[in-house]
Image (tube, rainbow, N blue to C red; front, side, top):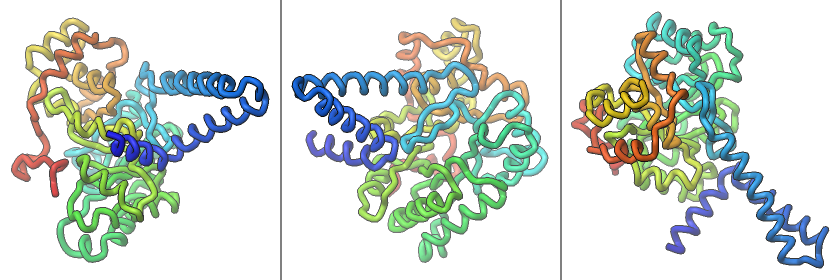
Length: 352
């Protein structure tokens, strides 16, 4: 238990935001001793309590999601809109361009794309043409390493080249850039070091991973060559596929969980519990899926190419699921993977 706590504290220290808060607390304690030396430990304790209270209040306020443009924190001090718009399976070209422009018009401020999706250029053009200031829109993209060729022999340069290619297609920096899946265990650290370099070069603001399990993340963090803790981990996550072990690792380290396939690919919209909770709130089953993610602190990425569905999926801030209802929804987990059929229903978070 002690070793686990020490490891967690060490991982927290590696986040710039956490270091800033710790320094602030230390300065408060020192100031208390200098200004009120006669009170000694009492002054330190009082200062600690006051500053901690302010920090907690600020953190709670920043995490309260009340509208479509609400943001939540990443562990590196940056933030991300609480609901994003997923671009997987969205055909490149006019379809992708038009639906992103429509999503932004509806109120989305977070677009999730990837080199693998082949629609980065369309996302970039739509964001540019939307009329919304770039700094108000968050773009996530990803690099998909292959299990062969230069991905194994020249891992670092391959990732850096793909980040630069993504930025060129987007026509702008990426606010968050991820390693798409934990392939090639011997090269993963090199992939990560390339993302650290991309961050230093200003190509990306935050860096993270996708489909990584606890062991994958711990190895990255433990490696003496790495200096940055992932800011986020994007995994398949919905009421029918909980990721409790991953959440238990990520949460204390400030690693934000981003939920792809948050609607369980519509495979369980007719579930009786989902239907019951939806009826109680005058909501749709899809909205219950999205709201469940929001209330857990995940960042869901619903996707659709139908305008009415796009609007429906982000309209989840007018109601709140009750604690009793959340318990019922939490109990629906059946390890339902919906996105990895072509790999034999692989669980990428459990790869070697």
